[in-house]
Length: 293
Image (cartoon, rainbow, N blue to C red; front, side, top):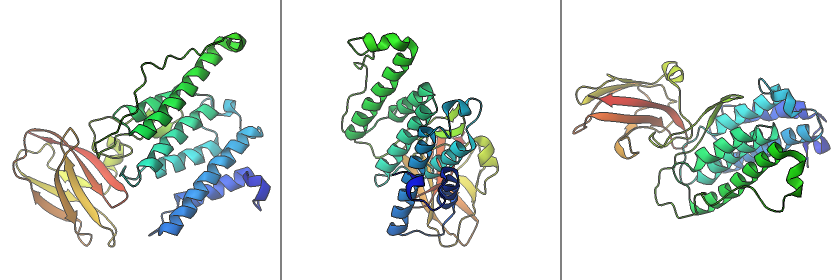
């Protein structure tokens, strides 16, 4: 059921703006029921956007240079909902967000970008069920790209053109760290995850880090003492975590929300590149790199 069938505004564009305002609002706290309603709002926003394309109110060609303004509202929400930590509890939800991003690009006619998002999602390992789902959609995207390239003659073919023999096979994923999650910067600018960054659904650029309220110094580090500056809500439970380049936690400490500065002494830290996060129970507030000399 699309929005115009039952929404009092009788206008998909107005409904999309309402959904955007609700989903982007910075709620102080949410209980389980609140989150259910927000998940439902996200689903309806997605369906409303799809209905705009079905009725021609938005066309793929409206997204040639930049996103259509209504599509941009949906992109804002996708990026915002991807900021959560990829934990075992949120694993499926975060995985589905990556599928939503890929399907958005398919909707606006950029199957190649959508396919790149799918391949990035599996680059560092997925559990068996998610890998099977991803393989299905990789095939759909790749076959559709072939169909569009061949044109009308595609319908006369009696076989599929996509070779799936190189696909990753579904296996049980035993690690507890999940590395996937893209950030849509603009229409053709996607920030992809790598397998050597601490577990977070999307990376923060250097410009973002410079504007944030979190600092870790000295960096590079030549001794064992580092200083942290941070700004967190007084009721928040926030941790500072330090990871080795292979994703293993080597230091984890609870921060005092009533202060905005602390000194840490990290013993037996070897020379190399490390990654740190400031995290609450369900959100990464900051991500950065620490070089130890």
